[in-house]
Length: 504
Image 1: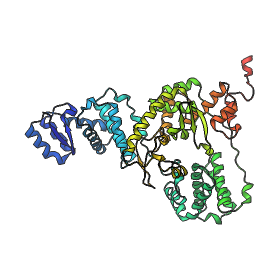
Image 2: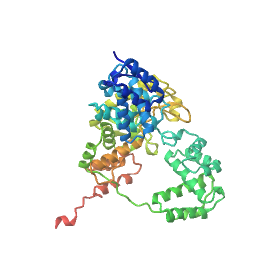
Image 3: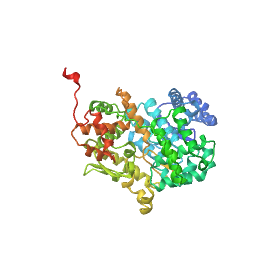
């Protein structure tokens, strides 16, 4: 007869573990669940149970602590595992499959009350259970890292969401990240600044940078209203950045651009002295490019197929990192083997090639997105984020499969402003970390980033004989001079040059 014992408020059958418990081992659990001591003692005496459930949990807690979990948090790990076991009463743990675990994590991910750190805690708890305790044959191959990393929620200030905020909402949301006192002291300045930026359809990254620089400028000038300041203060601030802070040339020019925009567009003042201010000359930097052999080594070093697919896609299409993670289902055309990149840098659309080698993995990813979306529709789900005009024109589009992100986050999250439940795209830091780790594992002694794959894409196309205009169009460069930098990487500035040393 299977005997059930109550542990931590959850019913756990001895069939789940497959061991026998002794009376003395049962009493061990009371140090973790003291309120159950009397009940466990009664069950042990009356039913004469002979299993080792308590010993199992003791070993689990010890393993969690050795893994780096504090003893206090380890008890929460036990509760997470108990909840998982309760959800699969009729199946022995040793008979569980990765598909069962994925379905469970998908279900947990649809609970908006779970913050990203709590979801990660659930994943870690189950990781310890299957990898260290049960040592399931499939556990080492399961994509644990994806479920941990993909749970990271997009912050309010993230470029995907922040554009939907009003000027006042944007200012309030950035109080903690920037200078709370300054932004609260002159709210009219920042509201007008953000409004002028959005009227010109500048990118959200530019908006965030300009707001940050204006805040620093006002703070430097002693919290004086910026409209009452003259060119002398501006010059002193820029000199402070260069001489005292030793900022990069691009940073110096960005600060100057932000302040010029503030006075010219917001305060409608032309400061003549700024026209004479010597702008720092931007240095010409050559991009880091991997050889074809290094690209192969990088791909072979990825810890799992999902990250490898994302890296393959960026190298094979030349897309930027944010363009890749923001792809939607409708952007991929399998029949024409092409991808439409929407609203990229400068607000332009363009078409890039879809590598044939990743068509099969992308079909598999599409199946995952379809299953995930089907489950989302069954719960209180408000649809994926859509740009303002599109959301107003097609109110129900956010719940259609074609508009879902191709690389979604592993959990739903509640928008703190609208309170709507959405599934956003994968956070870009997930693939950034994976590429960096793979570069180190492959022993590539170059700075390997997601943009390195884009540089390598352009360079390898030119090496294969494609003309510079074609590469310019694929990369989405407005000026061919930007693309010309790759001819210098090739050491072919118009003609091929051989070193005189090689002909001696």
